[in-house]
Image (cartoon, rainbow, N blue to C red; front, side, top):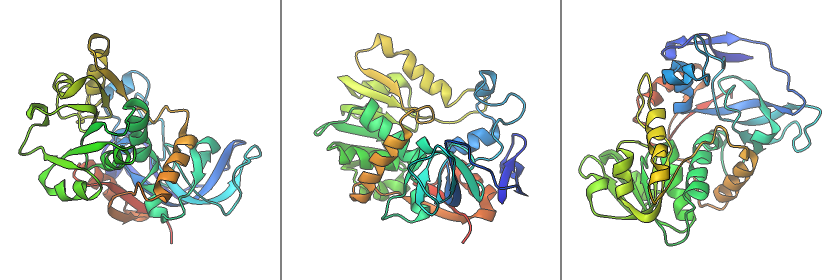
Length: 329
């Protein structure tokens, strides 16, 4: 098979297209013929080996990458199954979140991280869903505990996670306000935001409004300022933040969480990477997608051979919605 291999940390140029042997699925794994994958900050943080604090605490390899093939999301067809797999058979259309291996023509995915592909999505659309929508689902449903009638603010509403968070909050019956740049105002409104704040013209922490839940994806304002816009028993859910070489976005999330014991609001972080309920969450997302309540927003699609270019484009930080990759025919 063909795969883009990561041998060392660096820019997208370090991703090398190689011919490798097709992997064999383990007992609890499914071998997926990858038809599409997507690119997200998780991928290029691994590629860069940043923030460096993640290397020092062992989440990343200290000197070289622990993961050799990036690509957290996959959508495709089952090619083979391990002996303990009971829910899938060769030929099934699936999608999932293996957290690695998607930048290849074949990937082994644990059965617990895979679900049937939504019937109304193409492979490219399905590949845009797992990690971004899964993160948004944890933020909205589990940590934000969004209920009908809640007022929800999504800071970073135009990105991959943000576009799903807006739609999910609406699906759970909330009144949603999205924060984004001028060029994305119309798009954010089109996916269901009741109100949109252009951050180039207005600081959402100083407009006098109060919200029941703030989903903070952009990490553009300090945690203390974010808590100022919440009701006394509101919830602040930190998802990400602006990247830096040494500490961010981890530093922003940690600083938000550190204040939790000392404030009246609920403070938490949505961590889809270490979530044990991936399959359950994928099935919940499938139901919402097939019901027409949630739909992926795709900014641009690249062919497999241009994965380094796609990673560079996503890393630049201006893509509204998701960047996807078509693998094969």
